[in-house]
Length: 215
Length: 215
Image 1 (cartoon, one colour):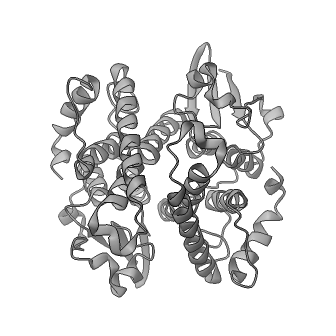
Image 2 (cartoon, one colour):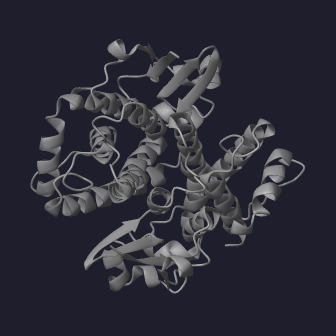
């Protein structure tokens, strides 16, 4: 039973990058695995089109479309798509291998997502003209969120003083989420300061040297 | 090898309730499973104490403490704790049983969390005096977030017109997240309006009648 797959993607956005990095770390090539990649240009407003809203009712990218003998299933949310691939390709696990490692990776992934990643996204959304048409922007909140992102960067630096990767000794999906968040932070003019954040800088060098980080 | 467990809990907060509901749905009784429950009073500011910050460096409740022959491991984040229990007690699965159901449940759980739940939490945090000391409150953003919560409630009502539970035909952790979010919405004065949201009201009646909803 062959399942046809389509991945709706956009090179410039952080969430689609999370899934591309995840696939690269698993050793899955879209071309070899028969996954058709469809480009949706967020900058041109293509995620707001009626056609795309039928694929992604919550408006998010990426989306994985599974066509199983004519019945289409649409999976959005980077972590849900990543989990699907973790299940069908168990090699090179990125979400843990036993109850404890699965829980620790989930904990750290969420801390990054609900903390740093959300602070950056909210600051961007409330401060950048690109989002004006679809957000009740509150400029003061954009500033408050950027300060919140700074606090999360500081906290992450402290954590990485005695942790090789985000969730411990092994590279995991939490490192993918954190790398995509840190690189995304440039939209709110945040960069790693090597003097202030030496541990974060050490981790950043380690993780961004992986071939998957080129995605 | 016996692992001693402690669950840091608070009856009045929505995140600890998610884990208690999850355990109840799995058929796990803390007393029978030897899980010691420790009450941390958020309203009295106990999550801000130095002692608690050592247990939960990000300040969140609940926390699961695992003491495996003297080595302590601390797991926070409701979903990470839930995943730990899903792994060690596979009966009555609430996070899916195959790649597709796991991905769909994760997608819906995230849509609820990152959408409705976050909108309610942000509106509460920026609008309620309880959070003044630890948040740079932006009152206008509290109002904007409450309107965002309304949009998510409207969307969820539409979705439930042709879905028995949040993630399809089966009850899952996504229903627990959604029920805890909807009940939490009373802090920003949001209730289900049966005329405006008949499908959400139907689902709410179904899910809140489960014994686990008493948690």
